[in-house]
Length: 63
Image (cartoon, rainbow, N blue to C red; front, side):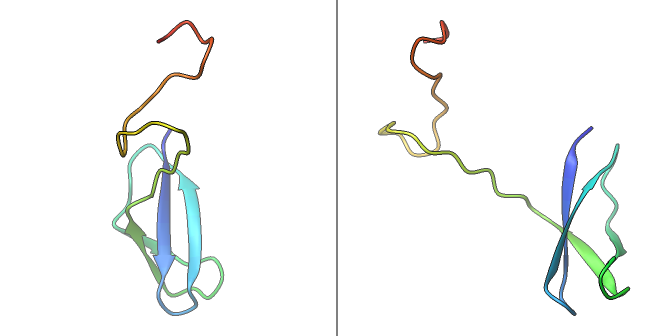
């Protein structure tokens, strides 16, 4: 199942929730106000010259 991120503007809390489908908003577990779904950022590091490109690790057999 995918992990969705929710952000609460009232208390700056970020919540990750495993769900079958994303809800538009959920109650914030920290303060009880509404936390809104936000786009998750995927980060990777590597020495690839193309920004955002996906590269198989060395010796993985996928290169």
